Image (cartoon, rainbow, N blue to C red; front, side, top):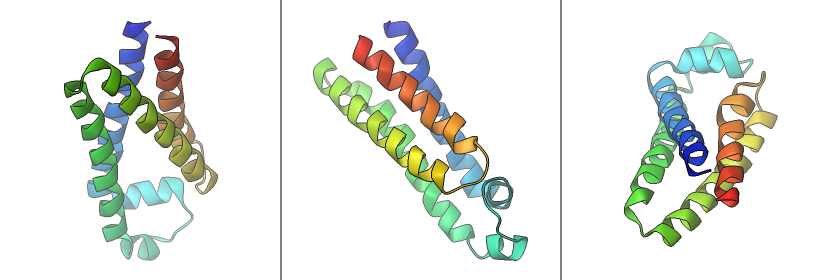
Length: 119
């Protein structure tokens, strides 16, 4: 089970870094995919995209740093973070078009959370 958990957790971390990259450097593409904003409207929200990017990068980095904790604290911390990612991804998925947030953020975090509980 540990192997599957680590793979799922890696998908969560990599996904957060990919989202952070996209939100920082490709915000207009992200807006087009997730919202109905016009290009002019999306252009006005670039600083908001960078703010989102910093949060996503922080989550990915935080999960990585959690491996420095003792095992019991690490599992508890990762579990709480994964549960919060599932919750925030569900909220995000409900407010965007398409299934990008659902598939690329919620699903990996939910799978990792299940494998963590099965450990």
